[in-house]
Length: 192
Image 1 (tube, helix red, strand yellow):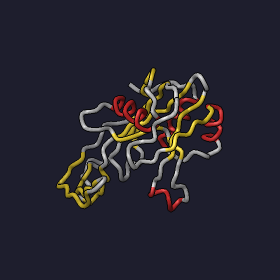
Image 2 (tube, one colour; image 1 turned 90 degrees about the vertical axis):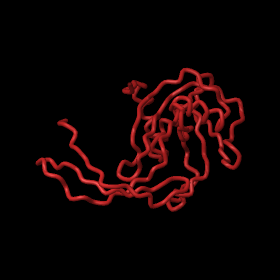
Image 3 (cartoon, one colour; image 1 turned 60 degrees about the horizontal axis):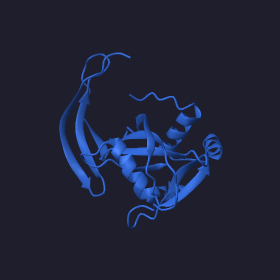
Image 4 (cartoon, helix red, strand yellow; image 1 turned 180 degrees about the vertical axis):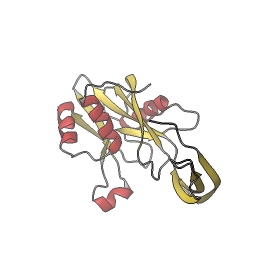
């Protein structure tokens, strides 16, 4: 794998700030021959890190998913994607605490047997966000729906059907696919 090459940052400037921020940095990096690249401008969308959880209701052998409006996906004709429960990790909160909080808010479920699956970067060319995936058990008894204004729809899908949907390319959300494919291969965790 080799050693990690060095990088230099000459400056960072915030170019947008709202729900997320966009920073423009002037950077240079060590090239394979040891020379330094010219300084170039790079953009990074900063929205913090997030956590997601694949919730299994073992009594009914279903997974709990949610649908909520996602404006960026309108151009793909899929503004209500099927997703596992997820949300931003608040300051001073662990990833596990975030999924426990989100499960209560979105689907009204208290999680049991929470286990970390993996971490990944969803789009490292432009986003700094790291997503931590968990799996857990929980019993859905109605409720949830998200915080005021979120309009979260809870969707229960039998496990075998969810696996088939993932294999047929019917689920397009990355975090949901990571969790389902991990579970399909036997749930062997590579997480530390």
